[in-house]
Amino acid sequence: MKVLTRLLLAAVLCRGVFGTAAAQDVEASDMVQGGMRAVQMIDQGKTEELWDGATSATRKRIARTDFAAKVSRSRSPLGAPLQRTWVALNRQAVADPDSETAGQYVSIEYETRFSNKPDGTLRELVSFHLDRDRIWRFSGYVLR
Image (cartoon, rainbow, N blue to C red):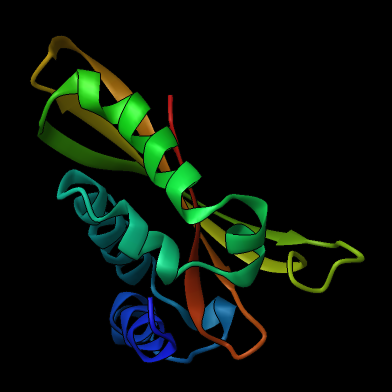
């Protein structure tokens, strides 16, 4: 993906939702909305585009196609999401010698019911990292 498209995606995902405020100034509701946008991109099969707007540390840790394949393997058997409710928001400061992974993180957890698993729910965890340029960027997705 071209650099301009990647920057525009990051702006839409993060700056539009969170602005450039410091980590402690970001509203929880904005983080929940940003997490919802991320999982909706996954719902729509836009995992590669989501990866394009991720932190550089995330893009180094997992290749674009590997990320898309991993998410697809975990989500496809479940069917479409029927109901999704956020249940937790956690903030964490990580001290790490690697400046790309050190810093402020926010994780949003959603309880989700899927069409192929109507009697139970799973947890989706979406994480964001406040990058050095003070923009919140997608940093991970886990389905439990």
